[in-house]
Structures are given as C-alpha cells and as structure tokens.
Picture 1 (cartoon, helix red, strand yellow):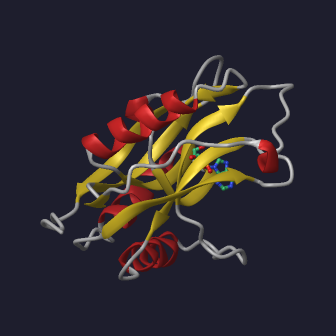
Picture 2 (cartoon, rainbow, N blue to C red):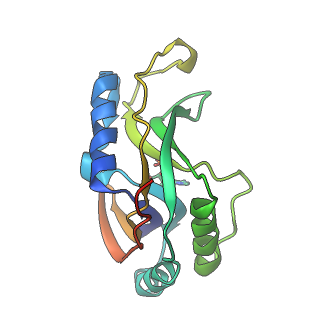
Picture 3 (cartoon, rainbow, N blue to C red):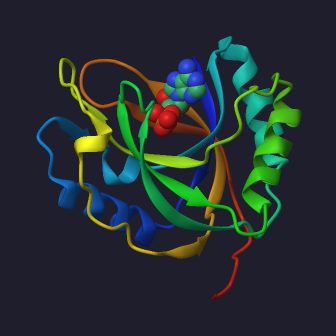
Length: 179
Ligand code: 2AM
C-alpha cells in the first residue's frame, strides 16, 4: 500500500484553494479535486499491508495542537521543470514544522535533507505540457489564516484518472481558535 502522512485543511480553505485553482484557469493544468487537497507531511511510499495499522497509530499519536497555518505564495514545483502548481503554507509559530518533525520521528523514517516546504498541490501539469514559471502570472492567493483540521495517514490509490486518497487513520486536531 502506498502511504503518506498528511495535514488536512478546513473545508473553507479547501474551497478557497479550489476556487483559486479555477481562477488560474490554465488548460495545461489538471486541478486536484477539492476533497483531495491536503498538505503532505511525510511520504512513506509503498509499505507492507500489515504495517498500515501500526503506522496509522503512530501518526494519530502525533496529533497535538492547535496548529495554526496560513496560505502563502503560489509555487511551481520543481521550478526548473514544474510538475505541479502548489500554494505554500506559512507556519507562523513553527507548529506545523513541529508536527511534521513528530511524524517523522514517530514513523521512523529518515528525514529528508531538503528543508520542509509545506504546500498544498492545487493542480498537476498535464503530460506533455511545459510551463515556464517566469512567464506565468497567477491570481493572488486569498490571505487565509486557519487551524490545521486533522492529521491523517492516507492511502493513495493510483490508477487512471485522479489519485484517490483513503484515510487509514485520522485524528482531529484541537481548534486554533480565531485570529
Ligand atoms: P505533492 O502534493 O507535492 O504532489 C500523495 O501522492 C502525496 O505524496 C502527494 O501529495 C505528493 O506530494 C506526495 N508525494 C508523492 N510522491 C512523493 C515522493 N516521491 N516524495 C515525496 N512526496 C511525494
């Protein structure tokens, strides 16, 4: 099973991101469905079926909060030959980075050498299309600040059409409150 730990966004943030992706309106891009928008914290890749329950429990045990975040700037990943259009997340008090660090430790994976760039992939570049970021103008991202809604271990079902994600384990985070 193909697994990853993800932070889940409040519904109104997913709606705003889907609306932003629609406003980009670029036919070279395939939007990610509103219900599938998420922040990948730790990508595990293929894991044995019988490891899923243990890994799910490990992720759920990391759910401490609240974890406040905000929508930041759009970002093409990777910039040299973009495959996705994402929106970066701000991590004003480091809680999102700390959540990821707990998940990395709990899952027992080696941390990536690259710095964590929290983001939500909003659209994927269609096969055969080429984007030159310097030539693109994008609409402004709505300046939303919010609490991460939940932490989940998600299973990714690959196949024809958009990826489908299924929660193996899920833990709601305490609300960050207004502000
Ligand atoms: P992305 O949002 O940056 O595209 C499920 O496939 C999630 O895991 C996606 O959200 C994707 O991140 C991330 N992912 C897929 N393959 C990955 C890889 N090889 N390394 C890190 N993250 C990956």
